[in-house]
Length: 113
Length: 113
Image (cartoon, rainbow over all chains, first blue to last red; front, side):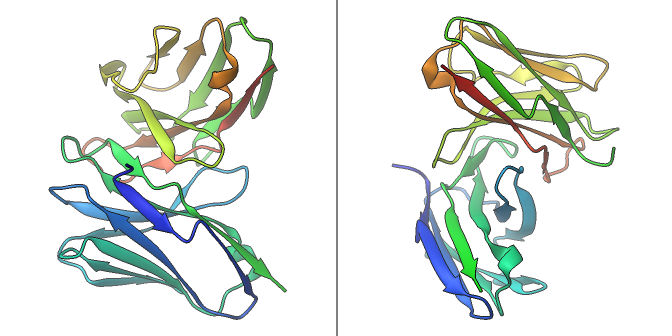
């Protein structure tokens, strides 16, 4: 079982609508959680990094939340744009290394006009 | 360039052939990472370089895989006697010493026929 699980696997929304992507992790001890955006044919780009002491962190129209007690994180996208169509990946460092990252399989988001 | 670059962007090879994938990290980044991303799956860690040495090769799936880095810059990932299961996108990332952020290249899509 993957230590980082994401849902939904894919999502289609209309332009302008909001959406929330979920991430559950079991990695322990926990140091930080990252959300990446990966456009088709490109490498992942960091959206936000959250430490265990942070509950909410925003980056423009992206807002990430973290509940370290329940080991859940969410990524909320507000007023979606066509350019938001991408895969969104939740990432947690392995407990035995800060650089070995465990990647979720991602949520593939498609924003339609 | 300002970002991580990889070449080739696409590579199609016949089963049994050797391939070399190249990564040019961001100038000054001492840490370099290789990942593999199979279709629909999360990124898998392959190898980590700190400078020119690789303290962690634990992710290399078999002895057909090897990597080197020279001049604390360019890295090459070599896959010998390629198999169809090697088909994937190979991503390279770089980062600063002690830094937690990893900056990804666009990847090389390898197809083994």
